[in-house]
Image 1: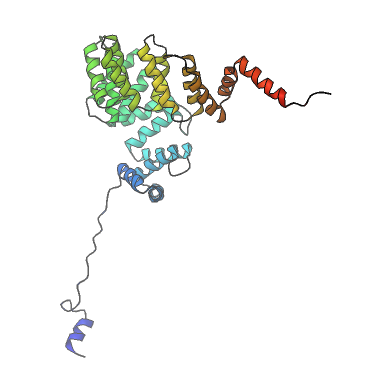
Image 2 (image 1 turned 45 degrees about the vertical axis):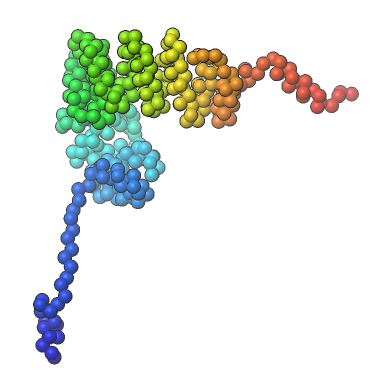
Length: 338
């Protein structure tokens, strides 16, 4: 046997081809990373998230619970969502602990229990979780005990000064309301205006609305109306529903027009109840001249989708003259009696 071949068979490193080096680098799984996966490839990501959750990864359990709660990419199951939040929270995941609190607060997959909600928020808040701090402050205010107001104020203040995330903006608006109303000390109109303005400029629609109310009260109607328009344009229908009735009840025509604008934007979603509400406002002319023709179109669409009050409204809109004309037309096609 030649020497070269013998060396190869004997494993001579000098003559054997080099082997590739394989390096496996572990990556930390985070909830934010999983959410990005869902945005890029939802179908594959849902399967991966479920498998990771079942394997015991807390971030995956949190995200999978959120998917079940929202019914996104998988059939909605609030009870299962709550169970996954609990599993993740048991590992010490603060975001999951906050979500357990939200479930108890809102009754998502479990009976409403304000005491347990507060307890969950307290645990996460003491560990520094921002949303839990804001949620805890809100729970303290809802409890109605004036002795809890200083702590709620302190929680909102720390959160308001801590950044510009959505939770920070919510805290800014709440802190401004404290200062405006004097709930934890003397009223501070200038401080309230500062925090409302800061949150409003960063895009918080409640702060924009509250800022507009102060500016109206101070006589700066033009600036107030601009902020109110921004709030209505950039918000969601939940917010618009809450402010529409408030604006439509105001004596000022400008405010009522903004209330009507809010109803119009809500109605664009096509929900029968929203179409009906917008139609009633148009028919009654709550922010200008009555517009029964447009109202009738809205009532017809709502009625076709099962809204009984819209159907009743349509019948009520038919004038006696039209009823008589319809009766005459029917009589003409009837065969004469003999």
